[in-house]
Image (cartoon, rainbow, N blue to C red; front, side, top):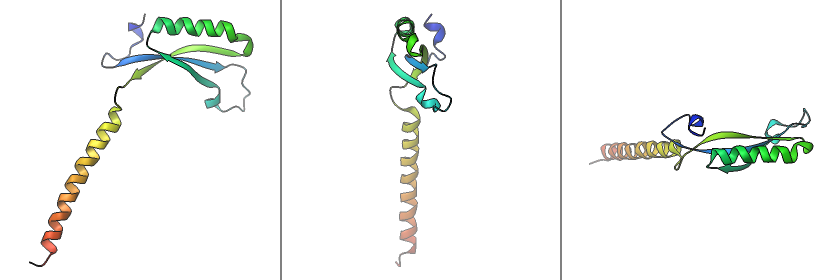
Length: 106
């Protein structure tokens, strides 16, 4: 069952057990209606925990479900952006140095 939940073989995945406040007032902001209870590596455990918590807390107006999430060991986008910025800054610094040399009387 867990393999069918993985959208990409390139990444590891984790499973968030999420609490949804069923009885929340309409004026309650959406980000206050959902709460990540825990994040686990095992899909079966996540499913069992969501069911257990739903059964335990249904009278409180909470429903629990599992949401898959991709696990990135390093922030890929941040690393790529930092490398690009460093490369650009290096080339800008070199260009500026050349301009200064050309403008300086010699």
